[in-house]
Each structure stands twice: as C-alpha cells, then as structure tokens.
Length: 168
Image (cartoon, one colour):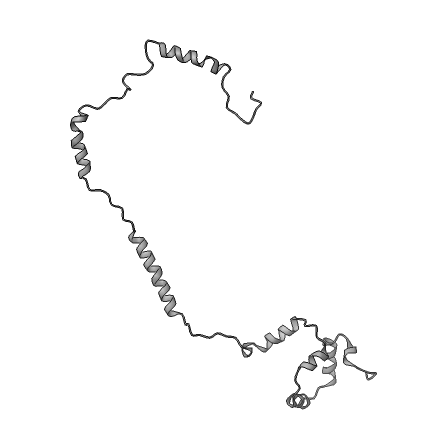
C-alpha cells in the first residue's frame, strides 16, 4: 500500500531497470508489431484528380459573415428611439419644490412630539411670537376647570414648572 498520499500514481517494481531491454527485444524481432496495412498511403489517382477537386473547391461561393448583425442594429435603433421618447415626454420645466405650506399640520405636530429639542417651556415661550389674536382666541372660549385639570394631569409631569405657589 502506498503510504505517500500526495502522489497516488506508482510504477511497478523494477520497471525502469528492465525497460531498455524489453524495448530492444521488441525492435529486434523479425516480425514488426506494426501493421503494413495501417501505414500511410496515398489514395488511388490522387495526384491525377487533385487539380480538378481543387478547382471545384475554389469555384464555390464563399460564406460571408456580416460584421454587423441586423438584429443588433434593430436593437440599438429601438433603444435610441425609447430614450428619445422618454426625453421628449419628460416635463423639464416642472418645479416640484416643497414649501412649508405643503406640510400638513398633523405632520408638523407629530414632528415636534417625536423629537426632543431639549428646550424648556420658558425657552419656547421666548421664541414664539404673541399676538393679540391669540389672546382673543383664548379669551373667547372659556375653559372649564375639569377640562383644564384633565389636560394638566395628562400632559404635565413636573408641576414645579407651572410656578404654583400654594394656590392649589
């Protein structure tokens, strides 16, 4: 068994020692092992009919392979036509610029509710403009105490921010 697994091919013992002797014995035999029938031989009347067969092959119409296939030309033309149709139908002068008016009020409220800006109510109050219409809107619809207390319980977590001084 071959212990060397890297090369699975092996030769018989003493093969190369007796190879020359075996080869010389076979070559020296009077009868050759090569068949005389399998030797190279020219077909009958080959050279007499050679010119005729050569002329026949030269006079046949050669096969012409075009460099550019018609299918490829049609494919390129179709793709160029498709690009041209798309380019002509595209509205190049459309202005789709978004403005603040395009946003829905619910989207703006959701943005402010979901993002923490780290601002206190006092800092927000300093930035917001106060106009007379806002006061009149507030005064025109009186609040009921129950609604106000429900709102404060749901939305205010730190009552110290409201600056109540023993007025509870």
